[in-house]
Image 1 (cartoon, one colour):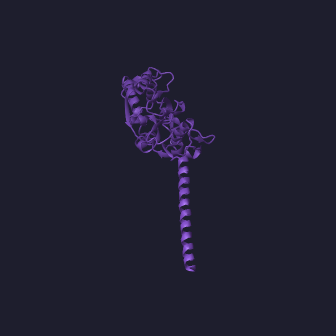
Image 2 (tube, helix red, strand yellow):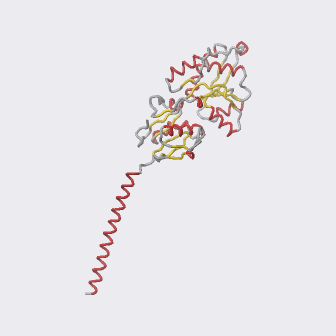
Image 3 (cartoon, helix red, strand yellow):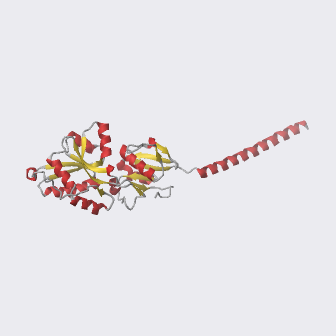
Length: 296
């Protein structure tokens, strides 16, 4: 009889333990479910990995209210400067030229207009958010320091600042690219003796879109004075500055001044801005869009 009581006690204990075990599992599952309903999966947004364009992307997202940067964080801000990230956004830093290629693999991507246009994205119609046309990010004509006043450079600058180019930008890009030239000219500099430049050539490094397309218009303007414009296209943000610094190419047209200033500081180069020609508003584009309800 004593033996039976012991067996009965052991069985009862095992059953109770099982009940508490299942109850505990049930509570844990319920709590986990409730917690899961309150915590959304992180949203992934791809942004340019170069200093100034990364800052532009973060400032755009701050402007839309999705993050908050530390006080004083400006045009060189990075993800380390994010103070508040209430939507648990995960940032994927990607080379600017590759952003359209990764768009399908992330929820959103902030893309430079030139690369968006190359990828058949219309910055005005397809972007879910777009920055204002700030002159701080005007794309510039740049040369090696000391060459600013060469007649060939002045001729190139005058042609880029022409009304023909401003009209071309307006008609061709319909707001995706905006001219920053306040007083367009006829394309020629009165201080230059164009006859002395007849038969000469000017070389320029440029991104394919829109820079090389704009330069094609400039080429026609210079050709009327028997000056040949040689355009070499690059798809990265490093070589166009390197070839100007080395003297291999006369000028470049692909970047904004904040980027150039940072490049000079980091690489000990000596390249200067000659003129601001256009601005390319940075846009936010939808990929998987698993949340944030297609940002407005």
